[in-house]
Image (cartoon, rainbow, N blue to C red; front, side, top):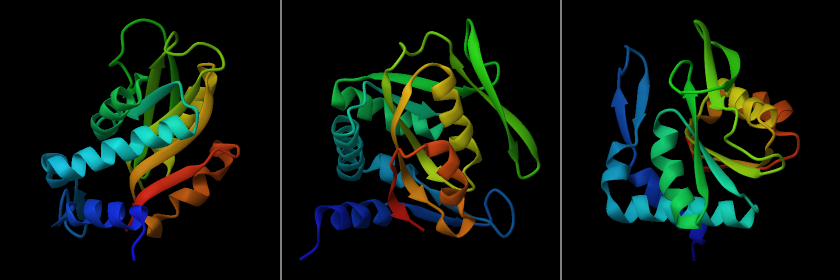
Length: 183
Protein backbone atom coordinates (compact mmCIF):
# COMPACT_ATOMS: atom_id res chain seq x y z
CA UNK A 1 0.00 0.00 0.00
CA UNK A 2 1.31 3.50 -0.84
CA UNK A 3 1.17 6.45 1.50
CA UNK A 4 -0.74 9.65 0.69
CA UNK A 5 2.63 11.47 0.32
CA UNK A 6 3.82 8.85 -2.18
CA UNK A 7 0.54 9.12 -4.07
CA UNK A 8 0.84 12.93 -4.15
CA UNK A 9 4.46 12.82 -5.33
CA UNK A 10 3.52 10.33 -8.05
CA UNK A 11 0.59 12.44 -9.23
CA UNK A 12 2.66 15.62 -9.31
CA UNK A 13 5.66 13.95 -10.97
CA UNK A 14 3.45 12.49 -13.67
CA UNK A 15 2.30 15.99 -14.61
CA UNK A 16 5.75 17.63 -14.81
CA UNK A 17 7.09 17.62 -18.36
CA UNK A 18 10.76 17.42 -19.29
CA UNK A 19 11.80 19.91 -21.98
CA UNK A 20 15.31 19.15 -23.28
CA UNK A 21 17.68 21.94 -24.28
CA UNK A 22 15.58 24.73 -22.76
CA UNK A 23 16.38 27.56 -22.16
CA UNK A 24 19.76 26.60 -23.61
CA UNK A 25 21.44 23.44 -24.96
CA UNK A 26 22.26 20.88 -22.29
CA UNK A 27 19.59 22.00 -19.83
CA UNK A 28 16.64 19.73 -19.03
CA UNK A 29 13.84 22.13 -18.02
CA UNK A 30 11.12 20.86 -15.70
CA UNK A 31 7.87 22.38 -17.01
CA UNK A 32 5.05 22.60 -14.46
CA UNK A 33 2.50 23.99 -16.96
CA UNK A 34 0.89 20.53 -17.48
CA UNK A 35 0.52 20.17 -13.70
CA UNK A 36 -1.15 23.58 -13.43
CA UNK A 37 -3.47 22.72 -16.33
CA UNK A 38 -4.60 19.47 -14.69
CA UNK A 39 -7.42 20.28 -12.25
CA UNK A 40 -6.86 17.16 -10.12
CA UNK A 41 -3.10 17.63 -9.76
CA UNK A 42 -3.32 21.40 -9.17
CA UNK A 43 -6.03 20.93 -6.55
CA UNK A 44 -4.03 18.21 -4.78
CA UNK A 45 -0.95 20.43 -4.73
CA UNK A 46 -2.91 23.46 -3.49
CA UNK A 47 -4.55 21.47 -0.70
CA UNK A 48 -1.25 19.89 0.37
CA UNK A 49 0.38 23.33 0.61
CA UNK A 50 -2.60 24.76 2.51
CA UNK A 51 -2.50 21.83 4.92
CA UNK A 52 1.20 22.38 5.65
CA UNK A 53 0.60 26.10 6.22
CA UNK A 54 -2.08 25.25 8.78
CA UNK A 55 -0.03 22.49 10.44
CA UNK A 56 3.00 24.77 10.76
CA UNK A 57 0.94 27.57 12.31
CA UNK A 58 1.56 30.02 9.48
CA UNK A 59 -0.35 33.30 9.48
CA UNK A 60 0.68 34.21 5.91
CA UNK A 61 1.98 32.41 2.85
CA UNK A 62 4.85 33.94 0.87
CA UNK A 63 5.33 33.23 -2.83
CA UNK A 64 8.52 33.88 -4.77
CA UNK A 65 8.42 35.51 -8.18
CA UNK A 66 7.18 34.25 -10.50
CA UNK A 67 5.99 30.65 -10.45
CA UNK A 68 5.93 30.64 -6.65
CA UNK A 69 3.03 33.12 -6.90
CA UNK A 70 0.98 30.58 -8.85
CA UNK A 71 1.44 27.99 -6.09
CA UNK A 72 1.39 30.14 -2.96
CA UNK A 73 -1.61 32.38 -3.64
CA UNK A 74 -4.20 29.60 -4.03
CA UNK A 75 -2.67 27.73 -1.07
CA UNK A 76 -3.01 30.85 1.09
CA UNK A 77 -6.63 31.21 0.00
CA UNK A 78 -7.38 27.53 0.71
CA UNK A 79 -5.84 27.87 4.19
CA UNK A 80 -7.72 31.09 4.94
CA UNK A 81 -4.48 33.07 5.12
CA UNK A 82 -3.05 36.17 3.47
CA UNK A 83 -0.55 36.03 0.62
CA UNK A 84 2.66 38.09 0.36
CA UNK A 85 4.71 38.29 -2.84
CA UNK A 86 8.49 38.54 -2.84
CA UNK A 87 9.43 40.19 -6.11
CA UNK A 88 12.39 41.15 -8.22
CA UNK A 89 13.88 44.60 -7.65
CA UNK A 90 11.73 47.53 -8.71
CA UNK A 91 8.41 45.67 -9.01
CA UNK A 92 6.80 46.68 -5.67
CA UNK A 93 5.51 50.16 -4.76
CA UNK A 94 6.30 51.93 -1.51
CA UNK A 95 9.06 51.21 0.98
CA UNK A 96 10.71 47.83 0.60
CA UNK A 97 13.31 45.65 2.25
CA UNK A 98 15.84 44.45 -0.33
CA UNK A 99 18.17 41.46 -0.34
CA UNK A 100 20.84 40.86 -2.98
CA UNK A 101 22.28 37.44 -3.70
CA UNK A 102 24.66 35.77 -6.12
CA UNK A 103 23.59 33.87 -9.18
CA UNK A 104 25.66 31.56 -11.34
CA UNK A 105 26.50 34.49 -13.64
CA UNK A 106 26.01 37.72 -11.68
CA UNK A 107 23.66 38.80 -8.93
CA UNK A 108 20.02 39.67 -8.34
CA UNK A 109 17.95 41.52 -5.76
CA UNK A 110 14.62 40.54 -4.23
CA UNK A 111 12.24 42.83 -2.37
CA UNK A 112 9.29 42.67 0.00
CA UNK A 113 7.18 45.60 1.15
CA UNK A 114 8.12 46.92 4.59
CA UNK A 115 4.54 46.63 5.83
CA UNK A 116 3.92 43.10 4.51
CA UNK A 117 4.12 41.52 7.98
CA UNK A 118 3.33 42.48 11.52
CA UNK A 119 6.13 41.66 13.97
CA UNK A 120 6.15 37.99 14.93
CA UNK A 121 3.88 36.76 12.15
CA UNK A 122 4.70 33.19 11.10
CA UNK A 123 5.12 32.63 7.38
CA UNK A 124 5.34 29.65 5.10
CA UNK A 125 7.55 30.30 2.06
CA UNK A 126 6.46 28.49 -1.11
CA UNK A 127 8.30 28.17 -4.42
CA UNK A 128 8.27 25.88 -7.42
CA UNK A 129 11.91 24.73 -7.49
CA UNK A 130 14.80 24.41 -5.08
CA UNK A 131 17.93 24.45 -7.22
CA UNK A 132 21.07 26.04 -5.77
CA UNK A 133 19.19 27.71 -2.91
CA UNK A 134 20.16 31.31 -3.70
CA UNK A 135 16.69 32.71 -4.32
CA UNK A 136 15.07 30.92 -1.40
CA UNK A 137 17.95 31.81 0.93
CA UNK A 138 17.66 35.51 0.06
CA UNK A 139 13.90 35.30 0.57
CA UNK A 140 14.28 33.78 4.02
CA UNK A 141 16.66 36.57 5.00
CA UNK A 142 14.11 39.11 3.72
CA UNK A 143 11.26 37.54 5.69
CA UNK A 144 13.22 37.85 8.91
CA UNK A 145 14.38 41.41 8.17
CA UNK A 146 10.74 42.34 7.60
CA UNK A 147 9.91 41.16 11.14
CA UNK A 148 8.29 37.80 10.47
CA UNK A 149 9.20 34.35 11.80
CA UNK A 150 9.78 31.46 9.44
CA UNK A 151 7.25 28.66 9.93
CA UNK A 152 8.79 26.61 7.12
CA UNK A 153 9.54 26.27 3.44
CA UNK A 154 7.76 24.01 0.97
CA UNK A 155 8.84 23.64 -2.64
CA UNK A 156 7.15 21.64 -5.34
CA UNK A 157 10.37 20.22 -6.79
CA UNK A 158 13.94 19.83 -5.53
CA UNK A 159 16.82 19.37 -7.94
CA UNK A 160 18.76 17.25 -5.46
CA UNK A 161 21.94 17.07 -7.55
CA UNK A 162 22.50 20.84 -7.09
CA UNK A 163 22.86 20.68 -3.27
CA UNK A 164 20.57 23.65 -2.59
CA UNK A 165 19.29 22.02 0.60
CA UNK A 166 22.76 22.12 2.15
CA UNK A 167 23.22 25.79 1.18
CA UNK A 168 19.90 26.70 2.83
CA UNK A 169 20.69 25.16 6.22
CA UNK A 170 22.12 28.38 7.64
CA UNK A 171 19.08 30.38 6.48
CA UNK A 172 16.49 27.97 7.92
CA UNK A 173 17.49 28.33 11.58
CA UNK A 174 15.74 25.06 12.42
CA UNK A 175 12.56 25.65 10.37
CA UNK A 176 11.50 22.70 8.20
CA UNK A 177 12.31 22.51 4.50
CA UNK A 178 10.02 20.17 2.62
CA UNK A 179 9.89 19.16 -1.01
CA UNK A 180 7.04 17.31 -2.66
CA UNK A 181 9.04 15.88 -5.58
CA UNK A 182 12.80 15.22 -5.70
CA UNK A 183 14.46 15.08 -9.10
